Length: 138
Image (spheres, rainbow, N blue to C red):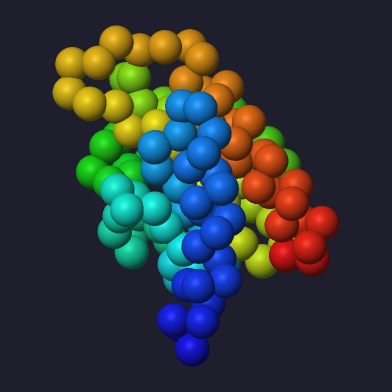
């Protein structure tokens, strides 16, 4: 059942939220289904499906921008199923595994200053969860 899936995947999202500079986290199935997400992470179904599809592209040239929670993100890097993207002071990393896409983000408040550390922080958090899930067979 969906409730069971949520309960087993939620700890991974909660773990990602413990990393510095992460305030939004989610795990999506490759079919665009939501496995788990943090409280303030609520992208539309269309946004999730576009992002999941984007992780399957081979370069940023094929997926140069996308929308996530109504914010327009520009793809900085897309390689081997991993996307690093920015929207002003907001940062987002999405990483594909065999069965899922892990998303770690920092969604900035209005008027916040951009920080170069933002992208590195969300990338680090998402890559740690990707590594753990991949090692668990997902």
